[in-house]
Length: 214
Image (tube, rainbow, N blue to C red; front, side, top):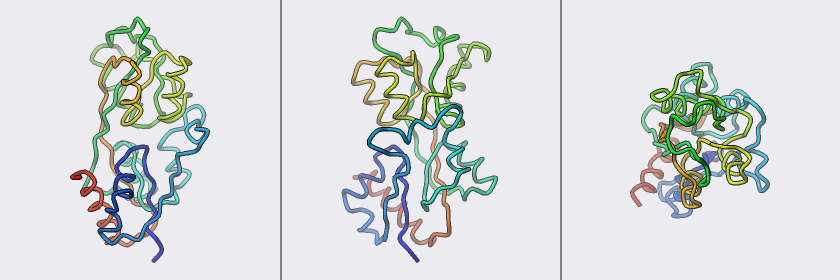
């Protein structure tokens, strides 16, 4: 068996486990394959209506991947991998606007383009959050602004009026003074792809539990 290939998912869990030596502690022979990171951010600028689900359709070269629970469920149901049923994570998420924006209440987002990831957690969680304030015809989502970090960049540069972000970029934008209009926190799940040793999968999640406890 080769190394267990891990695709970090725009969050700190795996990086903490690596830097703290938790993967080594549990005896996992692993390597990172960060498929969504690049120095110039181009890997997050996927084009219109291309999101997490489409990346699973194209195929992932890693043994463990993460995305919103919906995306993992649907991708697994059509054979793009196997959902790991014994663990999940929660992604703190929200729709944010620039500090100078006049939008202070969810109802004021009616007709405002909100940048989300197509068929990704931000897509569905934003609709779910807003439907208690707006009719479906009033919720206007933009799918052309890329994945998480690209949406963050566009919001910082004032190229979009509002964006749904989660995890690190969510905290980063709040520190820069961007305003949370509504919470849209959602669940994430993990996908096992290829044919990894089941013991390695268990070692991977043991290391993440150590990272969480630490």
